Every structure is written in C-alpha cells, then in structure tokens.
Amino acid sequence: MESLRDIRQNIKAIKSTQQIMQTMKMISSARIRKAQDAMDAARPFAKKMLQMVDDLKQDILAMPEPEDGESWAGRFFVNKTGDAGKIGLLVITGDKGLAGSFNAVILRSVLQFLKEHKDKEIFVFAVGKKGRDFLMRLKMPNLHIAYESVGIFPKVSYAHAELLGEAVLKTYFEQKLGEVVLIYNDFKSLASQNLVEQRMLPFDFEQHHNDKDESDFLFEPGMLEIFQLLVPRLVKANMYRFLLESQAANLAATMNAMDAASKNAGELVTALGVKLNKVRQASITNEILDIVNGAEALNS
Image (cartoon, rainbow, N blue to C red; front, side, top):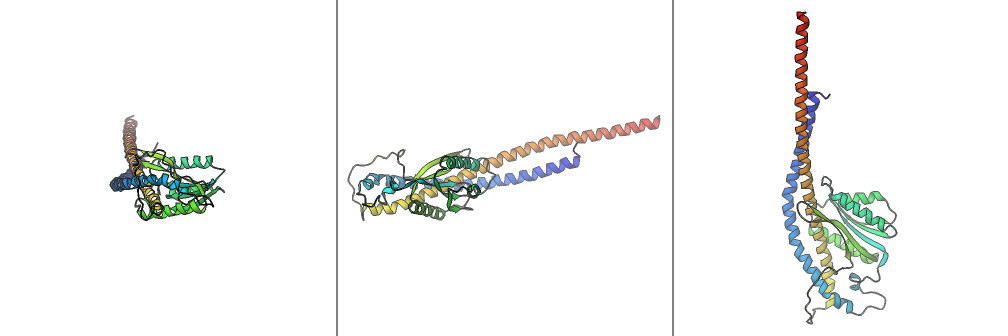
C-alpha cells in the first residue's frame, strides 16, 4: 500500500500539471479569436480570385497552343505536358503536439497517400514541424522534400504564404509535375476540424459554379497578361487561407485537448483524495488498535 507521503506527492504533481494545461487552454482561447478573424478576412478575397480565374478559363483554353507543346497558361487547367509519374504533395500540420488527434489524422492520410502512389516520384512541401519530421523519418527513395517551413504557427503572415506559393509554382513547372495535392485540417468549428485532401494544381473548377455573363469583354493590356498577374496571386492567396485555416483548427484542437486533460486531471486528484482519506483512516485505526492491544497486555 502506498504511504500518505507518496499519495500527497502524486496529488501535488497532478495539480501542477493541471495548472499547466489550464494555462495552455487559456493561451489557445486568447489566440483563437484573432486567428478566426484573420481566417474569415482571407476567405472572400481567395474565393473572388478563384472566380476571376474561372471566368478566364474558356478564353485561355481557346487560345492557340504553341507548336512545341502546351502553353504556360494551359498548364494551370489541363497540364498535358505534366509528367503523371511526378506528384507534388503539400502537407500542413502543427509545429507542436498536445492537440489531440489533430496531427495524427493528417499523418495517417499522408501515409495512405504515399502508399497509393508508391510507384511515383513525390515532391513534398512540408509546413509544420510534426509533418516535416514525420516525412524525413520515412526515408523513402521516391520522396523528396522540395520545401519546408517550421515554427511559423501561431503567427502566420502573408510572407509565409508567398514563399510557399513561389516554391510550389517553381517546382510545378521545373519538375513538370502532373498535379499538386493538398492535405490539411480545415477549420469547421471550435469543436471539430475537417480533414481535407484536394487537388490544387491544375485548377479544378468542377465544384465551382459561376453564373458568367456571356457579354464580350475587352482586356487591357491583354487577357494573357491579366491571367499572368492573377494566377500567382491566386495561388498565394489560397496558400494564405490554407495556413490560416490550419492555424485556427490547431488552436481549437489544442484548446479542446487541454480542457479535456485538465478535467481528467481534476478527476484523478479527486480519486487520489479519496484514496488518501482511506489510507489515513486505516493508519489511524491501526494506531488505535495498537494502543488498545498494549493496554490489554498491561492489564493482563
């Protein structure tokens, strides 16, 4: 049986851990409002940019193709010259743990993706220390870390999205990737996150419905020039939105995990308190029995 001293030390250690968990919960709660505001502000701009590029799709595809292959603009929609044996994978995880199943869900999906495409060459863009470390430990011969960014959460800025977007576009064209796939946790609510696996490049507008005006438009300085300006901004704007969504989802997961852990610690302290009382009562009872037995021995 544990001594009173051991039980008291356990209670003290658990209470100390509980205080740390409560502090982490409060920090996440304070940060998540700012993260949500930034995320909500980024969504309309990214969606509007997507609509603008969608408006230009048919006109871009109708332009004559160069004799030596596919045009620069055409690769964003059809990508006929891309190598189907090469795939880009953008993975966004957290930099730290203590967020419940937030990172584990993403990494399981990544592992499944790698198994399904084990016969292809995969270029990874890893954002978040957890994902970067996991991918580096795999040591797969067909896996290449094309870009990594760690330690940016929870202070994501547009500069991080610019660097990420430039790396993705550069690798997409230089390595002639067939497609680029994104895996991350989307912010659904404070209580839950939604795992997302979607194709980023070439653009997929199958689920994007836009009521286009069939009127003719004049583009100045030119349709292709406008498209060349829009596409990099669209990619970076969406990168920024993805990072903000993941950041908010991570903070929500951390807050919920720390809240649950704090409650569990409280229940454990209560249980240890009951055990402490039982051991103390047993000790007092034994002392009384020793006194009674000693008194009877003297009287006899």
